[in-house]
Each structure stands twice: as structure tokens, then as C-alpha cells.
Length: 390
Image (cartoon, rainbow, N blue to C red; front, side, top):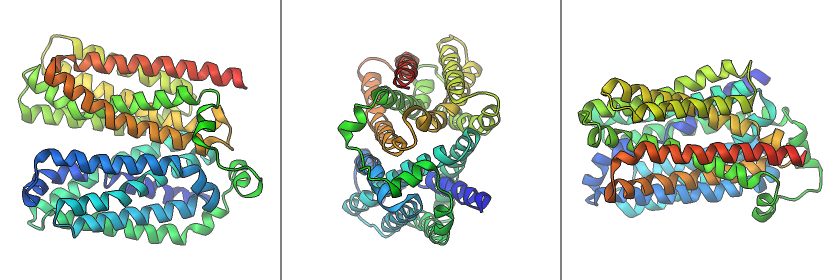
């Protein structure tokens, strides 16, 4: 039963990744059909992000009240319903409307599942599960591309993903007894003690909470900025052809996915703190390579190294949360971490866009380096604060 539940969680992580890159893959067709400016994609993405932040902050209350299994099943269903809503939308305002349950569902399932895995499974499973997210994020655009090239339209692409999510919802509903049978001390407390969900102020006042929030903010800011602006940097500053640059940028995500598969094996020898430091060191090496005044080969190597370095950081920070803050508070802290991550995702890539537009896109590696330094400093402060607290 234990292995069956793990397989279901792996499936859920693939499902989590499936919708994440759909909007970007379909928008070049969507905005023309909807007759709106190309920039309107940012509005939809912002609504989704706000919903995700809200549901992440509520994850502690929801999980304590209903349990991880039910929260996951309902959240996946909400996402499926939103994707189906996208598939039948024929106007921009309808997309905005369906973006609300899209974001609310994504945040709840992300925070609840990550906490469950952090409590119940070894660090290697956290790395491999986030590798599965990468598989899903890669499959989503492929499915959308199949729908578009086959002449079925972007609506059909969203509908196919919605059907897959509905199937997963059914699997999750049938698996609810397995979740009940796999309770840790933290889960038992959720049901048996008289503790109440922590307020945002209470969570922030926990020793190390501010530091881990900034660490997570920086990591997601770095990953998303690198993914969004790498291609533009290579074209505008390095003079690399746009088609080649797009392929190089894609290899950044390949680096993350492959890196997480490898990280799962490394965690058998290294602990979470060592893995995070190793990842930060590899990111630094990748950024340093981007500074070198050479051709395409070094640019390619730099992006792959940054992706490989990013690989262990996210899953290992999450997996270390119960150790740093206690299993009874880990869900609350992970919810706030997720919210911080989405805020970083929303704010920092657009900020670099302004820098690139008004100053120079050549500052791309400098921007990444500053974020990395802040992330590393805050992570070391987190270790110090949590060590003092214990």
C-alpha cells in the first residue's frame, strides 16, 4: 500500500506540471483568435498567481481540517474544471474568470503534497517527484503542440489536459483510504490535538521563517528569470540566432529535470543542507561561465549548469522544513514558502524586463548573481536561526 500511494503521488506531481506551460505554448495562437494584445497573457498569469498565493496561505487550515488526500483530490478537480473552462472559452474575460479556480487549485495541492512528502518520504523521493513535475511541464506544451499542428485548435489542447486531470481526480478519490493509513506524528496532531491553524503573523514570527521565505523567494525569482530571459539575453547580447537561442533556453529546463533525477541518488550520500549548498555552487559556476566573452558553446554550458544547480535547491529546502520547524508546523511554513515562491515568480522576472528595456539586457548574469548571493546568505542565516531555536 505504501508503494501504491507513492506511485499515486508521483502521478499527481506529473499532473501538477502538465498545465504550467500551456498558456505560454498556446498564447501566440490564442491572442489572435481572441483579438486582444499579446501582453494580456500577463493578466491571466497574474490572476492565476494571486489565486495560488491565497490557497498556499490557506493550506495549513485546509489540510488540518480535511487531510492531505481530500485537499489534493478537490484541488486537482478544481484545476481540471478550470482547464475545461479554458477549453470552452471564447473571450478574454472568460479566461480571467476560469483563472481563479485554476490558481486556487494549484496552490493547495502544491503545498499539501509537498508537506506530505517531506513528512513521510526520504529526500530522494522529493527530488524525483519534482523531476516528475518537470516531465509534466514538458508534456503539456507537447500535447498543446499536437492539438495545434493537428488542426484541432488550442481549445482541444486544454480539453485533453482537463480530461487527464479528471482521470487523476478519480484515482485520488479511490486512493483516499491509503492516505488515512499513512499517518505520521505530524498528521496525527492535525486530527487529535487541540492546536489551531497558525495565523500568518504567528508563522512569520517563528525562528527562521523570514529567512526561509526570502530563500524561497530568491530561488523561484532566479529560476523564472533565467527561464524567461535567457533566450533574449543570448540573442540581444551574445548575438546568437533566435532559433538557436530558443533551443539553448530549453536546455536550462532539461538541466533542472535531469539534475533532479540525479539529485535523488546524491541525497543517499548528502543531506539536504549539503545538497542546497552544492546546487548554489553549481549555479554560481554557470553564471560565471555566462560572463565569459566566448561563443555559443560557453553560453550553452552556462545555462545547463544553472539548470543543474537549480535542481536540488527547491526540493531540498522543502524536504528540510519539518526538520527545521517541526512536523506540527511544517504545513503552515511550507504554505508560506509556496506563497513567497509565487511572489518571487511574479515580481522578479518583470523587474528584469524593465532593467533590460531601460538599461541593458547584458545585466542578465549580474541580476542572477545578486539573487543567488541573497539566497545563499539567507539560507545560511536560516540554518543559524533554526540551530539556535533547537
